[in-house]
View 1 (cartoon, rainbow, N blue to C red):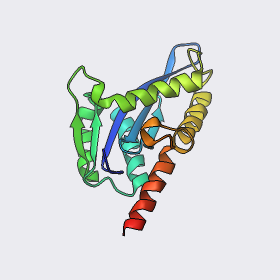
View 2: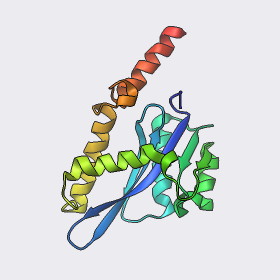
View 3: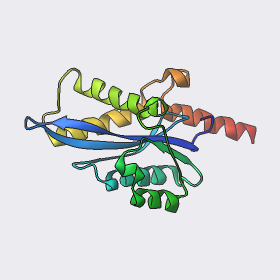
Length: 172
């Protein structure tokens, strides 16, 4: 994507916690141009409302998702009629890759892997659901505001977006 706010990718990842094999689930919406996580939601389930909440958070963050493309895998949450309805209401064009291929959703997969690698630091799980939620919140904030991306000339997503906005103001 060459323009901010036009193309997004999303995915769900498992967040293990406690000693009883419990999980929270994180759904993200990431701007493909700026790499910024613009919407996310954590829940103790993987129902469609999880991805709907993340998409609504993205819409609130961006003010609108009208005519934006949202790309995901073929998970049942993304293929449900409820989620398709939400996309239509928000003016989002849904896109899905080939079944069995994660290459076109690589940014979301990479962000999920980085989250776990950088927060768990070799541990297998968080101690509690509360600790998991706090660590994910801290990581998303850091990812957006301080984590540098080689694809963005080693700038953080919010800095990249601010630089783009400044260039548009200068051009106008």
